[in-house]
Image (tube, rainbow over all chains, first blue to last red; front, top):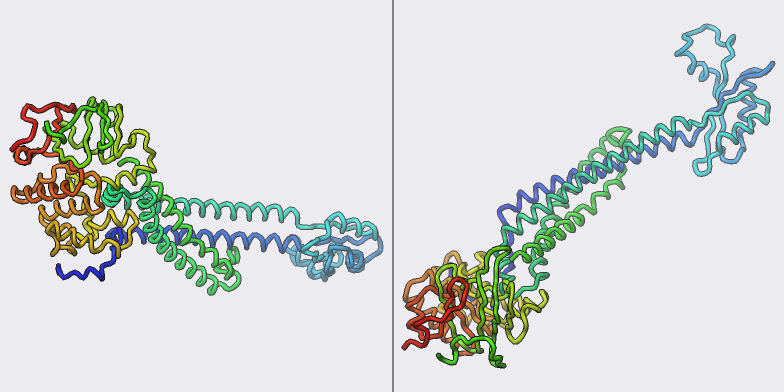
Length: 296
Length: 241
């Protein structure tokens, strides 16, 4: 080593070595866990969006089944029902479906019958509801009864209940997986921080001996491990964001599958990852360093 | 017995730097490693601590450099009751103590210069304030040409002197050394001893734990002899010409 030493150019070296041999492995492990956590977060958001979409579509519509009475033709009864419902508060559009639509619905059960006109096939009236303040099934039913119509209102409530339950399961599962993976990532960060700190026990001992305050010692490790975790978190988040963007581009608005529609805005969910990873690492470093100092 | 020799506790003096009164110490639930130790040391004194391995020399030093607290008894350092000192006050007290531990505790990734400057950095001094002092000190201990060297590249004696330089750079009131000449040859041992004498001449209280009876005998300095954790008088104790 050169012994030519210009004291005026001397700058204090960092208390801790700039890089350690185990750093790349630590960065890789934390990055993978952050990647999985971000991916699960994107999955949870997409699942939630999908579930909202299904229920939203069903909540906005109702179907009225109209049966003709007396000498009235089914088409005339359907037209009268449409007229009775149009203009009701919470109803935005009413459309009496053509008889072919009704035939299509019963064809799977009755097969191709030559003359369906001989059968008393009910007609359908599609009602589009105001999504913000939809008319209730009772209000629709009341309006139809007032016109003396034999009609049944189906507001899809049975389906909505099932779909909401399914959406809740999807959302809950995604959140549980996210919490599990985020927890595992946090535990790995904490464990790695402890191991790294134990390996630098010499620095802790020397600084303690020469009169460093506990906060001075722990802040060194907090900074170091927060920096490593932030870098790992950024790598993991960027990878997950990139994968999300690819899925969004391949599948368009519906994502890779209509069940998990990814929106561009969802990709922002990965942004807090580096900060959260850094916070967990800093906290773990602080707790471990303080414990180590106490044990000296 | 000389003025610097160990004195029984009880004569409170404004000039004393430390005082043990019936101090005992144990690790966890183990047996006492120090039993009923009472002593008082004046400022600017120079003492050796002797005793066989396991006699309690390192434990006594640990108490003095505040790495441990007495199990029983009273310990006053710099006029303060250590047993009542809060954990927050300990770092400030430690800054007044220079320690050369048996395993030296040098940081291998820092140069000799950075290792020496550590206590001053920790104390919050700016590099411009101390870099000349550090360089001067390293030159004084004979490492002027090795300032950039990393500890693993230094010889045993150089490491010892580096540890001493780090221990004294903050101008401590007490310098403690645990077997500072244990791993060096006779010539280096004498050189290191002369460093301690010079520091003591400048006003630092020096306490050295050692097995080196030859060095103790040559020095003529007072001795605190430990036997199974108890401070015992030595038949040969006293200045040796």
